[in-house]
Amino acid sequence: MRHRPWVPWAFLAAPLLMYSVWVIYPTLSTFYLSFTDWDGFSDLKDANFIGFENYYELFVWDDTFRKAILNNLKWILVFITIPTSLGLALALALNQSIRFDRFLKVSYYLPMVLSFVVIGLIWSWIYHPAAGLINGTLESILTLLKAIGLPVNPESARSIGWLADEDLAIWAIIAAAGWRQVGYVMILYLAGLKTLDPQILDAAKVDGAESWSLFRSVIFPLLAPITTIVVVISIIDSLRSFDMVWVMTRGGPYHSSEVLANFMYLEAFNNYNMGYAAAIGVILFLISIFFIGIYIWRIVKEEEAQGA
Amino acid sequence: MSMISEAKRPISRWIVAIVWIGAIIWLIPIVGAFVTSLRTMDDLNTNGFWAIPREFTLGNYTEAWTRAGISRYLLNSFIITLPALAFMLFFSSMCAYALVRFRFRLSKFLYFLFIGGMLLPFQILMIPVFRLSNDLNIYDTYWALILFHTAFQLGFCTFVLRNFMRTIPTSLFESAVIDGANEWTIYRRIGLPLVVPALAALATLEFTWVFNDYLWALVLVNRDELKPVTTGLSTLLGQYINNWPLIVAGSLLATIPTLVVFFALQRYFIGGLTMGATKG
Image 1 (cartoon, rainbow over the protein chains, first blue to last red):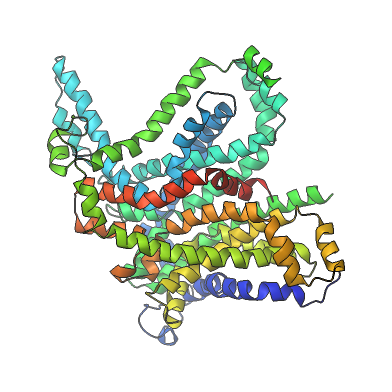
Image 2 (image 1 turned 180 degrees about the vertical axis):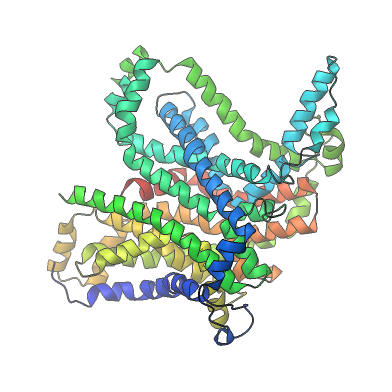
Protein backbone atom coordinates (compact mmCIF):
# COMPACT_ATOMS: atom_id res chain seq x y z
CA MET A 1 0.00 0.00 0.00
CA ARG A 2 1.52 3.31 -1.07
CA HIS A 3 1.20 6.26 1.21
CA ARG A 4 3.14 9.36 2.09
CA PRO A 5 5.69 8.38 4.71
CA TRP A 6 4.42 10.81 7.33
CA VAL A 7 0.82 9.62 7.26
CA PRO A 8 1.14 6.79 9.83
CA TRP A 9 3.02 9.13 12.14
CA ALA A 10 0.20 11.66 12.00
CA PHE A 11 -1.99 8.99 13.59
CA LEU A 12 0.67 7.87 16.01
CA ALA A 13 2.07 11.20 17.17
CA ALA A 14 -0.25 12.08 20.04
CA PRO A 15 -0.67 8.57 21.52
CA LEU A 16 3.02 7.79 21.18
CA LEU A 17 3.92 11.05 22.88
CA MET A 18 1.72 10.10 25.83
CA TYR A 19 3.05 6.58 25.90
CA SER A 20 6.62 7.83 25.88
CA VAL A 21 6.05 10.32 28.66
CA TRP A 22 4.09 8.07 31.03
CA VAL A 23 5.40 4.59 30.26
CA ILE A 24 8.69 4.45 28.35
CA TYR A 25 10.49 7.36 29.96
CA PRO A 26 9.49 6.28 33.52
CA THR A 27 10.80 2.78 32.85
CA LEU A 28 14.17 4.14 31.80
CA SER A 29 14.12 6.71 34.56
CA THR A 30 13.66 3.97 37.18
CA PHE A 31 16.94 2.47 35.97
CA TYR A 32 18.70 5.80 36.36
CA LEU A 33 17.21 6.51 39.80
CA SER A 34 18.32 3.11 41.05
CA PHE A 35 21.93 4.28 40.82
CA THR A 36 21.31 7.29 43.05
CA ASP A 37 20.49 7.95 46.69
CA TRP A 38 17.65 10.36 45.88
CA ASP A 39 15.31 10.95 48.84
CA GLY A 40 12.26 12.29 47.00
CA PHE A 41 12.37 15.77 48.53
CA SER A 42 15.58 17.39 47.40
CA ASP A 43 16.42 18.32 43.87
CA LEU A 44 17.39 15.23 41.92
CA LYS A 45 20.49 17.08 40.75
CA ASP A 46 21.76 17.14 44.33
CA ALA A 47 21.38 13.38 44.74
CA ASN A 48 24.59 11.37 44.64
CA PHE A 49 25.36 8.87 41.95
CA ILE A 50 26.30 5.80 43.94
CA GLY A 51 26.71 3.12 41.28
CA PHE A 52 25.52 -0.33 42.29
CA GLU A 53 25.43 0.41 46.00
CA ASN A 54 21.64 0.04 46.26
CA TYR A 55 21.84 -3.36 44.58
CA TYR A 56 24.70 -4.43 46.80
CA GLU A 57 22.72 -3.43 49.88
CA LEU A 58 19.63 -5.29 48.61
CA PHE A 59 21.30 -8.55 47.76
CA VAL A 60 23.85 -8.72 50.54
CA TRP A 61 22.24 -7.11 53.55
CA ASP A 62 18.52 -6.76 53.18
CA ASP A 63 16.54 -9.54 54.84
CA THR A 64 13.24 -7.95 53.92
CA PHE A 65 14.20 -8.03 50.26
CA ARG A 66 14.91 -11.73 50.56
CA LYS A 67 11.52 -12.30 52.21
CA ALA A 68 9.80 -10.28 49.49
CA ILE A 69 11.40 -12.26 46.65
CA LEU A 70 10.60 -15.51 48.40
CA ASN A 71 6.98 -14.48 48.89
CA ASN A 72 6.66 -13.47 45.23
CA LEU A 73 8.05 -16.89 44.39
CA LYS A 74 5.49 -18.62 46.64
CA TRP A 75 2.80 -16.54 45.00
CA ILE A 76 3.96 -17.58 41.52
CA LEU A 77 4.21 -21.25 42.46
CA VAL A 78 0.70 -21.32 43.90
CA PHE A 79 -0.76 -19.31 41.02
CA ILE A 80 0.67 -21.45 38.21
CA THR A 81 -0.48 -24.67 39.86
CA ILE A 82 -3.66 -24.46 41.92
CA PRO A 83 -5.88 -21.77 40.30
CA THR A 84 -4.60 -22.84 36.90
CA SER A 85 -5.59 -26.49 37.22
CA LEU A 86 -8.84 -25.62 39.00
CA GLY A 87 -9.69 -23.14 36.25
CA LEU A 88 -8.92 -25.68 33.55
CA ALA A 89 -10.98 -28.37 35.28
CA LEU A 90 -13.92 -26.00 35.65
CA ALA A 91 -13.65 -24.94 32.02
CA LEU A 92 -13.70 -28.57 30.89
CA ALA A 93 -16.72 -29.30 33.08
CA LEU A 94 -18.67 -26.16 32.20
CA ASN A 95 -17.94 -26.45 28.50
CA GLN A 96 -20.37 -29.36 28.46
CA SER A 97 -24.09 -28.96 28.73
CA ILE A 98 -24.85 -28.54 32.39
CA ARG A 99 -28.10 -27.02 33.49
CA PHE A 100 -27.75 -23.51 34.89
CA ASP A 101 -24.24 -23.29 33.43
CA ARG A 102 -24.58 -19.49 33.18
CA PHE A 103 -25.23 -19.22 36.89
CA LEU A 104 -22.32 -21.54 37.66
CA LYS A 105 -19.92 -19.61 35.44
CA VAL A 106 -20.95 -16.29 36.95
CA SER A 107 -20.43 -17.65 40.48
CA TYR A 108 -16.84 -18.46 39.61
CA TYR A 109 -15.90 -15.30 37.82
CA LEU A 110 -17.83 -12.81 39.90
CA PRO A 111 -14.76 -12.14 42.11
CA MET A 112 -13.00 -10.76 39.00
CA VAL A 113 -15.36 -7.81 38.95
CA LEU A 114 -14.44 -6.78 42.50
CA SER A 115 -11.44 -4.55 42.98
CA PHE A 116 -8.43 -5.96 44.79
CA VAL A 117 -9.12 -3.48 47.57
CA VAL A 118 -12.65 -4.81 48.07
CA ILE A 119 -11.38 -8.39 47.93
CA GLY A 120 -8.71 -7.47 50.46
CA LEU A 121 -11.26 -5.89 52.78
CA ILE A 122 -13.79 -8.70 52.49
CA TRP A 123 -11.11 -11.29 53.17
CA SER A 124 -9.75 -9.26 56.07
CA TRP A 125 -13.18 -9.72 57.57
CA ILE A 126 -13.21 -13.43 56.67
CA TYR A 127 -9.90 -13.85 58.48
CA HIS A 128 -10.89 -11.71 61.46
CA PRO A 129 -10.12 -13.66 64.67
CA ALA A 130 -13.39 -13.01 66.53
CA ALA A 131 -15.94 -11.79 63.99
CA GLY A 132 -14.65 -13.51 60.88
CA LEU A 133 -16.19 -16.23 58.78
CA ILE A 134 -13.45 -18.85 59.13
CA ASN A 135 -12.94 -18.73 62.87
CA GLY A 136 -16.68 -18.30 63.30
CA THR A 137 -17.24 -21.51 61.36
CA LEU A 138 -14.56 -23.33 63.37
CA GLU A 139 -16.12 -22.09 66.57
CA SER A 140 -19.56 -23.36 65.54
CA ILE A 141 -18.11 -26.76 64.67
CA LEU A 142 -16.31 -26.94 68.01
CA THR A 143 -19.50 -25.96 69.82
CA LEU A 144 -21.31 -28.83 68.15
CA LEU A 145 -18.53 -31.22 69.10
CA LYS A 146 -18.68 -29.97 72.67
CA ALA A 147 -22.43 -30.48 72.71
CA ILE A 148 -21.99 -34.16 71.90
CA GLY A 149 -19.56 -34.44 74.77
CA LEU A 150 -16.07 -34.00 73.28
CA PRO A 151 -13.56 -32.12 75.46
CA VAL A 152 -13.03 -29.11 73.20
CA ASN A 153 -13.09 -25.40 73.88
CA PRO A 154 -15.00 -23.48 71.18
CA GLU A 155 -13.43 -20.20 72.29
CA SER A 156 -10.03 -21.49 71.19
CA ALA A 157 -11.02 -21.01 67.54
CA ARG A 158 -10.77 -17.27 68.10
CA SER A 159 -7.07 -17.49 68.83
CA ILE A 160 -6.09 -18.16 65.22
CA GLY A 161 -4.90 -14.86 63.78
CA TRP A 162 -4.68 -15.65 60.08
CA LEU A 163 -3.20 -12.32 59.11
CA ALA A 164 -1.33 -11.71 62.37
CA ASP A 165 0.71 -14.90 62.28
CA GLU A 166 4.10 -14.67 60.61
CA ASP A 167 3.85 -18.14 59.13
CA LEU A 168 0.28 -17.82 57.92
CA ALA A 169 -0.12 -14.25 56.64
CA ILE A 170 1.32 -14.61 53.15
CA TRP A 171 -0.55 -17.87 52.50
CA ALA A 172 -3.78 -16.29 53.70
CA ILE A 173 -3.32 -13.43 51.23
CA ILE A 174 -2.40 -15.76 48.37
CA ALA A 175 -5.51 -17.86 49.09
CA ALA A 176 -7.69 -14.76 48.82
CA ALA A 177 -5.97 -13.81 45.56
CA GLY A 178 -6.43 -17.36 44.27
CA TRP A 179 -10.16 -17.09 44.91
CA ARG A 180 -10.21 -14.35 42.27
CA GLN A 181 -7.76 -16.00 39.88
CA VAL A 182 -9.66 -19.27 39.32
CA GLY A 183 -12.49 -17.58 37.43
CA TYR A 184 -10.06 -15.69 35.24
CA VAL A 185 -8.23 -18.86 34.23
CA MET A 186 -11.58 -20.57 33.63
CA ILE A 187 -12.67 -17.82 31.22
CA LEU A 188 -9.42 -18.06 29.26
CA TYR A 189 -9.66 -21.84 28.94
CA LEU A 190 -13.35 -21.71 28.04
CA ALA A 191 -12.41 -19.40 25.16
CA GLY A 192 -9.62 -21.79 24.20
CA LEU A 193 -11.97 -24.79 24.23
CA LYS A 194 -14.33 -22.98 21.85
CA THR A 195 -11.59 -23.06 19.22
CA LEU A 196 -11.27 -26.86 19.41
CA ASP A 197 -13.17 -29.38 17.33
CA PRO A 198 -16.35 -30.24 19.30
CA GLN A 199 -16.12 -33.89 18.26
CA ILE A 200 -12.85 -34.33 20.12
CA LEU A 201 -14.40 -32.85 23.24
CA ASP A 202 -17.48 -34.99 22.82
CA ALA A 203 -15.37 -38.11 22.74
CA ALA A 204 -13.83 -37.08 26.04
CA LYS A 205 -17.17 -37.11 27.83
CA VAL A 206 -16.88 -40.76 28.73
CA ASP A 207 -15.86 -41.35 32.28
CA GLY A 208 -12.79 -43.03 33.54
CA ALA A 209 -9.41 -43.92 32.17
CA GLU A 210 -10.26 -43.52 28.52
CA SER A 211 -11.35 -39.94 28.97
CA TRP A 212 -8.34 -39.07 31.09
CA SER A 213 -5.87 -40.40 28.54
CA LEU A 214 -7.73 -38.59 25.78
CA PHE A 215 -7.40 -35.40 27.77
CA ARG A 216 -3.71 -35.94 28.37
CA SER A 217 -2.73 -36.96 24.89
CA VAL A 218 -5.09 -34.86 22.76
CA ILE A 219 -6.92 -32.02 24.48
CA PHE A 220 -4.22 -30.70 26.75
CA PRO A 221 -1.64 -30.48 23.93
CA LEU A 222 -4.20 -28.68 21.78
CA LEU A 223 -4.68 -26.15 24.56
CA ALA A 224 -0.94 -25.49 24.81
CA PRO A 225 -1.12 -21.94 23.34
CA ILE A 226 -3.71 -20.95 25.95
CA THR A 227 -1.72 -22.64 28.70
CA THR A 228 1.33 -20.55 27.82
CA ILE A 229 -0.75 -17.38 28.04
CA VAL A 230 -2.39 -18.48 31.30
CA VAL A 231 0.97 -19.24 32.89
CA VAL A 232 2.53 -15.96 31.75
CA ILE A 233 -0.50 -13.97 32.93
CA SER A 234 -0.45 -15.80 36.28
CA ILE A 235 3.21 -14.98 36.76
CA ILE A 236 2.79 -11.34 35.78
CA ASP A 237 -0.23 -11.05 38.10
CA SER A 238 1.82 -12.54 40.92
CA LEU A 239 4.60 -10.03 40.33
CA ARG A 240 2.05 -7.21 40.24
CA SER A 241 0.56 -8.16 43.60
CA PHE A 242 0.38 -5.07 45.73
CA ASP A 243 -3.15 -3.89 46.54
CA MET A 244 -4.20 -6.89 48.60
CA VAL A 245 -0.99 -7.03 50.57
CA TRP A 246 -1.17 -3.31 51.26
CA VAL A 247 -4.81 -3.48 52.38
CA MET A 248 -4.58 -6.70 54.39
CA THR A 249 -1.21 -6.58 56.17
CA ARG A 250 1.00 -3.79 54.74
CA GLY A 251 3.57 -6.57 54.41
CA GLY A 252 3.56 -7.43 58.10
CA PRO A 253 3.82 -8.84 60.66
CA TYR A 254 7.56 -8.19 60.65
CA HIS A 255 7.66 -8.07 56.84
CA SER A 256 6.59 -11.71 56.75
CA SER A 257 4.03 -11.07 53.99
CA GLU A 258 6.17 -8.59 52.07
CA VAL A 259 6.18 -8.77 48.27
CA LEU A 260 8.46 -6.81 45.94
CA ALA A 261 5.88 -4.24 44.83
CA ASN A 262 4.80 -3.58 48.41
CA PHE A 263 8.38 -3.34 49.62
CA MET A 264 9.10 -0.90 46.82
CA TYR A 265 6.15 1.27 47.79
CA LEU A 266 7.17 1.25 51.46
CA GLU A 267 10.75 2.26 50.68
CA ALA A 268 9.62 4.97 48.26
CA PHE A 269 6.70 6.61 50.02
CA ASN A 270 7.11 5.67 53.68
CA ASN A 271 10.88 5.78 54.05
CA TYR A 272 11.64 8.13 51.15
CA ASN A 273 14.50 5.98 49.90
CA MET A 274 13.58 6.65 46.28
CA GLY A 275 16.87 5.38 44.84
CA TYR A 276 16.68 2.19 46.84
CA ALA A 277 13.03 1.66 45.86
CA ALA A 278 13.94 2.21 42.22
CA ALA A 279 16.52 -0.58 42.49
CA ILE A 280 13.75 -2.90 43.72
CA GLY A 281 11.69 -1.77 40.73
CA VAL A 282 14.52 -2.59 38.34
CA ILE A 283 14.76 -6.10 39.75
CA LEU A 284 11.00 -6.52 39.37
CA PHE A 285 11.39 -5.33 35.78
CA LEU A 286 14.23 -7.74 35.03
CA ILE A 287 12.27 -10.69 36.38
CA SER A 288 9.17 -9.80 34.39
CA ILE A 289 10.90 -8.95 31.11
CA PHE A 290 11.78 -12.62 30.75
CA PHE A 291 8.13 -13.63 30.84
CA ILE A 292 7.06 -10.69 28.70
CA GLY A 293 9.60 -12.01 26.18
CA ILE A 294 7.95 -15.44 26.19
CA TYR A 295 4.56 -13.83 25.56
CA ILE A 296 5.83 -11.77 22.65
CA TRP A 297 7.66 -14.77 21.21
CA ARG A 298 4.37 -16.71 21.24
CA ILE A 299 2.64 -13.93 19.38
CA VAL A 300 5.40 -13.71 16.77
CA LYS A 301 5.14 -17.44 16.16
CA GLU A 302 1.37 -17.30 15.86
CA GLU A 303 1.48 -14.41 13.39
CA GLU A 304 4.06 -16.21 11.29
CA ALA A 305 1.77 -19.23 11.21
CA GLN A 306 -1.16 -17.04 10.18
CA GLY A 307 0.84 -15.21 7.55
CA ALA A 308 2.15 -18.40 5.97
CA MET B 1 -27.44 -33.56 16.41
CA SER B 2 -25.35 -32.78 19.45
CA MET B 3 -28.47 -33.61 21.46
CA ILE B 4 -28.09 -37.25 20.54
CA SER B 5 -24.45 -37.55 21.49
CA GLU B 6 -25.11 -35.73 24.74
CA ALA B 7 -27.95 -38.09 25.52
CA LYS B 8 -25.66 -40.99 24.83
CA ARG B 9 -22.91 -39.70 27.04
CA PRO B 10 -24.38 -37.70 29.88
CA ILE B 11 -21.97 -35.75 32.02
CA SER B 12 -21.15 -37.55 35.22
CA ARG B 13 -23.32 -36.73 38.21
CA TRP B 14 -20.21 -36.49 40.33
CA ILE B 15 -18.81 -33.71 38.20
CA VAL B 16 -22.08 -31.81 38.33
CA ALA B 17 -22.16 -32.16 42.13
CA ILE B 18 -18.57 -30.99 42.55
CA VAL B 19 -19.09 -28.00 40.27
CA TRP B 20 -22.19 -26.98 42.24
CA ILE B 21 -20.51 -27.35 45.61
CA GLY B 22 -17.54 -25.37 44.32
CA ALA B 23 -19.81 -22.60 43.06
CA ILE B 24 -21.51 -22.34 46.43
CA ILE B 25 -18.15 -22.18 48.22
CA TRP B 26 -17.07 -19.51 45.73
CA LEU B 27 -20.11 -17.40 46.54
CA ILE B 28 -19.79 -17.71 50.33
CA PRO B 29 -17.38 -14.77 50.76
CA ILE B 30 -19.70 -12.43 48.88
CA VAL B 31 -22.94 -13.67 50.41
CA GLY B 32 -21.31 -13.82 53.85
CA ALA B 33 -20.05 -10.28 53.43
CA PHE B 34 -23.55 -9.15 52.51
CA VAL B 35 -25.08 -10.78 55.58
CA THR B 36 -22.38 -9.26 57.77
CA SER B 37 -22.99 -5.80 56.35
CA LEU B 38 -26.56 -6.01 57.73
CA ARG B 39 -25.43 -6.71 61.28
CA THR B 40 -23.60 -4.82 64.01
CA MET B 41 -20.09 -5.45 65.23
CA ASP B 42 -21.29 -6.10 68.80
CA ASP B 43 -23.66 -8.76 67.57
CA LEU B 44 -20.90 -10.41 65.49
CA ASN B 45 -18.34 -10.26 68.26
CA THR B 46 -20.53 -11.80 70.92
CA ASN B 47 -22.57 -14.27 68.89
CA GLY B 48 -20.19 -15.21 66.06
CA PHE B 49 -20.94 -15.40 62.38
CA TRP B 50 -23.28 -18.39 62.34
CA ALA B 51 -25.63 -17.15 65.04
CA ILE B 52 -29.03 -16.08 63.75
CA PRO B 53 -29.09 -12.33 64.33
CA ARG B 54 -32.07 -10.90 66.15
CA GLU B 55 -32.29 -7.94 63.80
CA PHE B 56 -30.91 -6.72 60.54
CA THR B 57 -29.97 -3.09 59.98
CA LEU B 58 -29.31 -0.92 56.96
CA GLY B 59 -27.48 1.49 59.24
CA ASN B 60 -24.06 0.46 57.99
CA TYR B 61 -25.05 1.36 54.46
CA THR B 62 -26.43 4.80 55.31
CA GLU B 63 -23.43 5.53 57.49
CA ALA B 64 -20.96 4.44 54.78
CA TRP B 65 -22.82 6.31 52.05
CA THR B 66 -23.11 9.63 53.87
CA ARG B 67 -20.78 10.15 56.80
CA ALA B 68 -17.96 7.93 55.58
CA GLY B 69 -18.22 9.65 52.20
CA ILE B 70 -18.57 6.68 49.86
CA SER B 71 -20.96 8.70 47.67
CA ARG B 72 -18.32 11.38 47.15
CA TYR B 73 -15.59 8.81 46.49
CA LEU B 74 -17.77 7.04 43.94
CA LEU B 75 -18.40 10.31 42.13
CA ASN B 76 -14.62 10.89 41.98
CA SER B 77 -14.13 7.43 40.51
CA PHE B 78 -16.51 8.32 37.68
CA ILE B 79 -14.83 11.69 37.13
CA ILE B 80 -11.52 9.89 36.69
CA THR B 81 -12.68 6.79 34.82
CA LEU B 82 -14.96 8.19 32.12
CA PRO B 83 -12.55 10.71 30.52
CA ALA B 84 -9.68 8.23 30.77
CA LEU B 85 -11.86 5.69 28.98
CA ALA B 86 -12.74 8.11 26.17
CA PHE B 87 -9.13 9.20 25.67
CA MET B 88 -7.64 5.73 25.70
CA LEU B 89 -10.16 4.33 23.20
CA PHE B 90 -9.70 7.30 20.86
CA PHE B 91 -5.91 7.24 20.95
CA SER B 92 -5.52 3.48 20.78
CA SER B 93 -7.88 3.23 17.82
CA MET B 94 -5.64 5.70 15.97
CA CYS B 95 -2.57 3.65 16.87
CA ALA B 96 -4.23 0.43 15.79
CA TYR B 97 -5.32 2.01 12.51
CA ALA B 98 -1.78 3.19 11.77
CA LEU B 99 -0.30 -0.22 12.62
CA VAL B 100 -2.77 -2.16 10.48
CA ARG B 101 -3.28 0.15 7.53
CA PHE B 102 0.29 1.17 6.74
CA ARG B 103 3.47 -0.72 6.15
CA PHE B 104 6.34 1.23 7.60
CA ARG B 105 9.56 0.56 9.40
CA LEU B 106 9.16 0.29 13.15
CA SER B 107 5.53 -0.83 12.90
CA LYS B 108 6.32 -4.30 14.34
CA PHE B 109 8.61 -2.72 16.91
CA LEU B 110 5.88 -0.35 18.06
CA TYR B 111 3.43 -3.23 18.29
CA PHE B 112 5.79 -5.14 20.58
CA LEU B 113 6.44 -2.00 22.59
CA PHE B 114 2.72 -1.77 23.30
CA ILE B 115 2.51 -5.46 24.27
CA GLY B 116 5.53 -5.09 26.52
CA GLY B 117 3.92 -2.13 28.23
CA MET B 118 0.64 -3.90 28.81
CA LEU B 119 2.40 -6.71 30.69
CA LEU B 120 4.72 -4.51 32.74
CA PRO B 121 4.39 -4.74 36.52
CA PHE B 122 3.32 -1.11 36.55
CA GLN B 123 4.58 -0.51 40.08
CA ILE B 124 8.05 0.02 38.66
CA LEU B 125 6.77 3.26 37.12
CA MET B 126 5.58 4.76 40.39
CA ILE B 127 8.54 6.92 41.34
CA PRO B 128 9.14 8.57 37.95
CA VAL B 129 5.40 9.06 37.38
CA PHE B 130 5.10 10.63 40.83
CA ARG B 131 8.00 12.96 39.97
CA LEU B 132 6.58 13.73 36.54
CA SER B 133 3.18 14.63 37.97
CA ASN B 134 4.88 17.07 40.32
CA ASP B 135 6.88 18.59 37.48
CA LEU B 136 3.77 18.96 35.34
CA ASN B 137 1.90 20.50 38.29
CA ILE B 138 -0.84 17.93 38.09
CA TYR B 139 0.03 16.02 41.27
CA ASP B 140 -3.03 15.76 43.52
CA THR B 141 -5.49 16.52 40.71
CA TYR B 142 -7.85 14.31 38.72
CA TRP B 143 -5.63 14.87 35.69
CA ALA B 144 -2.69 13.00 37.19
CA LEU B 145 -4.82 9.85 37.19
CA ILE B 146 -6.72 10.45 33.96
CA LEU B 147 -3.55 11.01 31.95
CA PHE B 148 -1.64 8.14 33.49
CA HIS B 149 -4.45 5.62 32.98
CA THR B 150 -4.94 6.79 29.41
CA ALA B 151 -1.26 6.36 28.61
CA PHE B 152 -0.72 3.08 30.40
CA GLN B 153 -3.81 1.37 29.00
CA LEU B 154 -2.84 2.33 25.43
CA GLY B 155 -0.74 -0.84 25.39
CA PHE B 156 -3.58 -3.27 25.96
CA CYS B 157 -6.15 -1.34 23.93
CA THR B 158 -3.87 -0.97 20.92
CA PHE B 159 -3.01 -4.66 21.10
CA VAL B 160 -6.65 -5.74 21.08
CA LEU B 161 -7.81 -3.21 18.47
CA ARG B 162 -4.93 -3.92 16.11
CA ASN B 163 -5.74 -7.63 16.11
CA PHE B 164 -9.39 -6.88 15.55
CA MET B 165 -8.73 -4.42 12.71
CA ARG B 166 -6.50 -6.91 10.95
CA THR B 167 -9.60 -8.95 10.22
CA ILE B 168 -11.09 -6.12 8.12
CA PRO B 169 -10.51 -6.91 4.43
CA THR B 170 -8.03 -4.44 2.91
CA SER B 171 -10.28 -4.05 -0.12
CA LEU B 172 -12.67 -2.02 2.03
CA PHE B 173 -9.94 0.56 2.63
CA GLU B 174 -8.73 0.42 -0.97
CA SER B 175 -12.11 1.20 -2.44
CA ALA B 176 -12.37 4.23 -0.20
CA VAL B 177 -8.98 5.42 -1.47
CA ILE B 178 -10.22 5.10 -5.05
CA ASP B 179 -13.25 7.18 -4.13
CA GLY B 180 -10.80 9.88 -3.14
CA ALA B 181 -11.24 9.78 0.62
CA ASN B 182 -8.30 10.87 2.73
CA GLU B 183 -6.90 8.69 5.50
CA TRP B 184 -8.59 10.58 8.32
CA THR B 185 -11.96 10.08 6.62
CA ILE B 186 -11.25 6.39 6.04
CA TYR B 187 -10.32 5.98 9.70
CA ARG B 188 -13.51 7.68 10.81
CA ARG B 189 -15.92 6.24 8.24
CA ILE B 190 -14.56 2.70 7.86
CA GLY B 191 -11.95 1.87 10.49
CA LEU B 192 -13.84 3.01 13.58
CA PRO B 193 -17.34 1.75 12.74
CA LEU B 194 -16.00 -1.72 12.01
CA VAL B 195 -14.25 -2.08 15.35
CA VAL B 196 -17.23 -1.00 17.44
CA PRO B 197 -17.65 -4.50 18.94
CA ALA B 198 -14.03 -4.48 20.06
CA LEU B 199 -14.39 -0.94 21.41
CA ALA B 200 -17.42 -2.02 23.42
CA ALA B 201 -15.53 -4.96 24.88
CA LEU B 202 -12.57 -2.79 25.74
CA ALA B 203 -14.76 -0.11 27.28
CA THR B 204 -16.40 -2.63 29.59
CA LEU B 205 -13.14 -4.17 30.67
CA GLU B 206 -11.20 -0.94 31.01
CA PHE B 207 -14.02 0.65 32.97
CA THR B 208 -13.64 -2.09 35.56
CA TRP B 209 -9.85 -1.86 35.59
CA VAL B 210 -9.55 1.90 35.90
CA PHE B 211 -12.43 2.09 38.35
CA ASN B 212 -10.74 -0.56 40.50
CA ASP B 213 -7.25 0.98 40.41
CA TYR B 214 -5.69 1.45 43.81
CA LEU B 215 -1.94 1.98 43.48
CA TRP B 216 -2.08 5.07 41.27
CA ALA B 217 -4.76 6.68 43.38
CA LEU B 218 -2.50 6.09 46.36
CA VAL B 219 0.59 7.54 44.68
CA LEU B 220 -0.89 10.45 42.74
CA VAL B 221 -3.75 11.81 44.84
CA ASN B 222 -3.56 13.00 48.42
CA ARG B 223 -6.56 15.25 49.08
CA ASP B 224 -9.48 13.39 50.57
CA GLU B 225 -12.05 15.20 48.40
CA LEU B 226 -10.37 13.88 45.23
CA LYS B 227 -9.96 10.26 46.24
CA PRO B 228 -11.61 7.56 44.13
CA VAL B 229 -13.55 4.88 45.91
CA THR B 230 -10.64 2.45 46.24
CA THR B 231 -8.38 4.69 48.30
CA GLY B 232 -11.49 6.16 49.91
CA LEU B 233 -12.37 2.71 51.21
CA SER B 234 -8.96 2.19 52.69
CA THR B 235 -9.31 5.40 54.67
CA LEU B 236 -12.46 3.88 56.21
CA LEU B 237 -10.19 1.21 57.57
CA GLY B 238 -8.43 3.79 59.71
CA GLN B 239 -11.57 5.77 60.51
CA TYR B 240 -13.77 2.91 61.62
CA ILE B 241 -11.18 0.66 63.18
CA ASN B 242 -12.55 -2.81 63.65
CA ASN B 243 -16.09 -1.93 62.58
CA TRP B 244 -16.12 -4.66 59.97
CA PRO B 245 -19.83 -4.61 59.10
CA LEU B 246 -19.47 -0.96 58.12
CA ILE B 247 -16.27 -1.51 56.16
CA VAL B 248 -17.84 -4.45 54.34
CA ALA B 249 -20.97 -2.41 53.62
CA GLY B 250 -18.76 0.32 52.13
CA SER B 251 -16.92 -2.27 50.04
CA LEU B 252 -20.16 -3.62 48.62
CA LEU B 253 -21.41 -0.11 47.82
CA ALA B 254 -18.11 0.57 46.06
CA THR B 255 -18.67 -2.47 43.88
CA ILE B 256 -22.13 -1.55 42.61
CA PRO B 257 -21.01 0.42 39.50
CA THR B 258 -18.69 -2.31 38.26
CA LEU B 259 -21.32 -4.94 39.03
CA VAL B 260 -23.92 -3.04 37.02
CA VAL B 261 -21.55 -2.65 34.09
CA PHE B 262 -20.59 -6.29 34.33
CA PHE B 263 -24.12 -7.68 34.40
CA ALA B 264 -25.38 -5.32 31.71
CA LEU B 265 -22.46 -5.96 29.37
CA GLN B 266 -21.27 -9.40 30.46
CA ARG B 267 -20.82 -10.66 26.92
CA TYR B 268 -18.48 -7.78 26.10
CA PHE B 269 -16.58 -8.15 29.34
CA ILE B 270 -15.77 -11.80 28.68
CA GLY B 271 -15.13 -11.03 25.02
CA GLY B 272 -12.58 -8.37 25.90
CA LEU B 273 -10.74 -10.59 28.34
CA THR B 274 -10.36 -13.43 25.92
CA MET B 275 -9.63 -11.17 22.94
CA GLY B 276 -6.40 -10.25 24.62
CA ALA B 277 -5.43 -13.84 25.17
CA THR B 278 -6.67 -15.94 22.30
CA LYS B 279 -5.96 -13.70 19.35
CA GLY B 280 -2.66 -12.22 18.39
